[in-house]
Length: 301
Length: 331
View 1: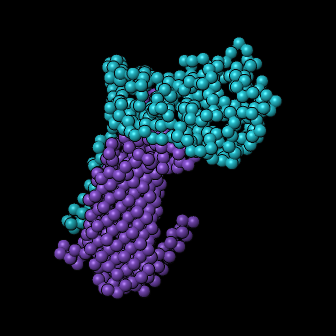
View 2 (view 1 turned 30 degrees about the vertical axis):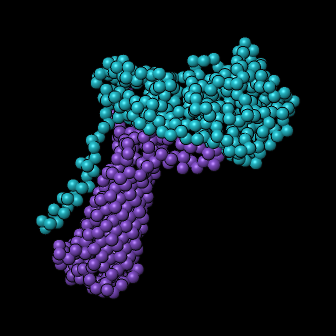
View 3 (view 1 turned 45 degrees about the horizontal axis):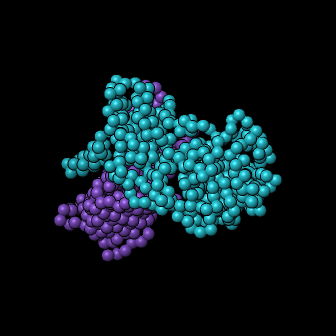
């Protein structure tokens, strides 16, 4: 009984929202070139991380986590600009082979702080009415903070991976230009006209930097009595290197609401290989979640 | 439609990092694990030359004892033997069923009996943070027991303890059987026994594949801090159980003219130990740096000798000869 009531309430709410939106929102049509829109968005994603730091272990650490991010976006027919700050926290476990005696393991708390920016430009020559392609530079800086108590003095793992990337974005317009009626046996639905888009983006690192520990990972650096900063001491032998690679893909399904805001479901993949000077670090993060875009401003072009 | 399909295919391919990363190295194969640990130690261990260890011979001697069919117990036994040739208590193999140790302290006489101290010297001791302390010799001397550098303390606690003994003729700080801990507790402890920033030692860390390849000398300074400075004579009691951070402490005191080491040579442990994991998931650690005194000498790994050598007499458990000798120096 409870489930039936719940179902009816949900259905009624959904139809109400659809009707309201149908009444207020005619689709703007594919790729509105006449304006630039600024958005502020919040994202939340369930994530899966994998990493391996050859300096301390040859084993992969994998585990689930949660990511949140906030974005400032500017989108127009000609450009696409995004500034994103995201945080992720993961519980990762070593992929240890099975033991005949007692199973060993490994646990690491893996935190990431990521700053991302891109500025993409419309490429008219390879776009058409349905596909719109934009290409441009992107910058990505990821600071990892890993804690694995099982590694004694190497328990704290810090690395920064910074990349100047080339980004290519493809937007496919899937707007429903007219209201659509669906007639089921018990219910009749009207799907209102709606602007919808599929965004696919691929980023590839061009200049790949990483900030990694020195030869022995741990380093017995200078100590100035009680004035020593433990963080400076820990980072004394870290160096920037330019090597490795980074790849990212973003897949996002967006649908716009009558008030100009938008809702999306997305999947992001981010993989990096940072050889450093001595031993490599590798990581990959899969994020699947939703975002809500608040339209802040419409700028007529 | 074709374009969309191609796009999704490309996307799926890219999102599979296992294709892009090097292969998974996890394995229980004893030979692979032996090779991995031997190589890691070869690349990073810091005392091969000082201890005159022929690491290649260790490889040649121990590897034939293993085969790909060896059991986990056999592997543990061989890897433990391999690490114990380093004669270093900062070197351990940690399997889920056992931990390998060299046990420096068990190879020498013990010079500390807690019961003797508590019963016959400080039966009404105050406990302030990790410090156990009281007056000795009718209030002329302060005795402070600090059992582990793992136990943190605040500046306020250390101020309080030193303030209590400000009018004494001298202090005894008992670091016997102190197995070490946080190096920053050493600097905090010694910061009250100097009036100025003092260079007290150096460290060097492995930075290349050759066994004698080290990075630059890094200074180890002591600086004054806190509200209470104690510049009267201080006797620091040490023995073979004084290891790691306590050995660091012993070396650094050599730069402080008001501090004297009494007891037996420390256990050593002058290298900073790292940490790592084998392809089968077992963990290990070993020293990757060296501690040098102000003259650049490296003896800390084998222990810092006291300036006044005294042994505990186990035939009489009512007297601590090392405390008695320190008292004699102070009174």
